Image (cartoon, rainbow, N blue to C red; front, side):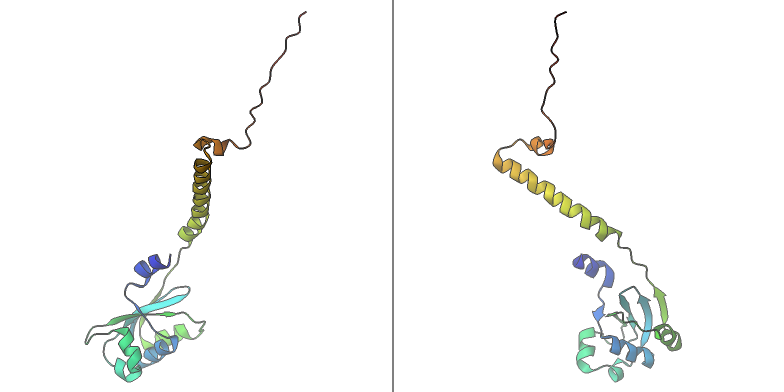
Length: 149
């Protein structure tokens, strides 16, 4: 799941501490922001980053000269975030997250694993494959005796 999120969600965004994000926001170096339930991502303007960020943070962002770079940060409960974004003039939007796929997989994968394991146990013990699903079926037969009249 984390690999899937890394491939689809952040798309090359480099991690940035929230305090550095706020400093860049106040300095007007943030051009676009997308706010999700637990993360904030966006694009930084290429000019003027050296005056706001430390050298090691700037090196981690891997911004090339003249090209805007992407960032991501963990969302912190900040009631003034919307007002700060409006004051800085950055474009911002919310992002709805859908958790139906992880929830569905959390039910299907364990069930499939248990069925696969029961099949492997049945195969190793010499039982026919269909016998695993015959648990609870009665093999009793009813014989009706006819009484001569």
